[in-house]
Length: 114
Length: 153
Image (tube, each protein chain N blue to C red):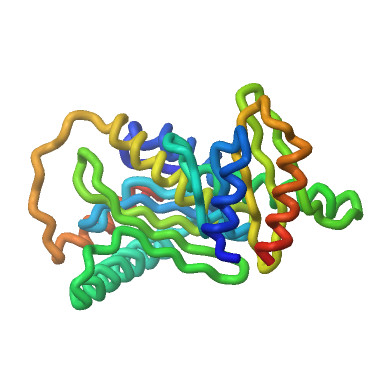
């Protein structure tokens, strides 16, 4: 499945403002589907940094790297799932969205992106 | 961090804090080093400034030969270190930035905060000085003068 098709599916979920495939090591956008006003390059850079720091934390704790993380803020949320080949799938969503459904869809998409 | 012009200090300090860059060099296209962070020897700054300007000039020329628009930024990625090199326009003329970063940060973060640095420099710059022609023969004397100031000699 192409990245654009994958991102298109994710952005059709109610409350999703954007989806990106990001190079985890570089924090660079590989593919994106974003609502107007969202700075994809900033989201990619910061999400990759966050992902790297969370992975560093779990390594320090002697645990395997997480496959999924979620950052909840007052006005929305950011979700990330690790894919194969150093890719990270990131969703930007509204605060009121069903986080459980998003998590499921994101993990499924990360598997398909492999 | 040392800067020749005080108005550069706050934007550069913000960039360094956010990007986690190890080395940073800001210079004019005529070779005057405006600010540096992380370099301990003037010789290193001189070499980095000359090589950085050379790389950007070479890539711009390559783009011209291929009929492409000029390239303003170049990124080199190594296993342990990366280099981000970019030309940008300020109210004080065209400047070059050279950033060396490690695995504690990423190219995406460096690019993101470098763009913010450029915006902040544009806002912080005092009224424009009269433009003067940039000559190749000015490069080395300008560089030596600014190195003396940046390393307190």
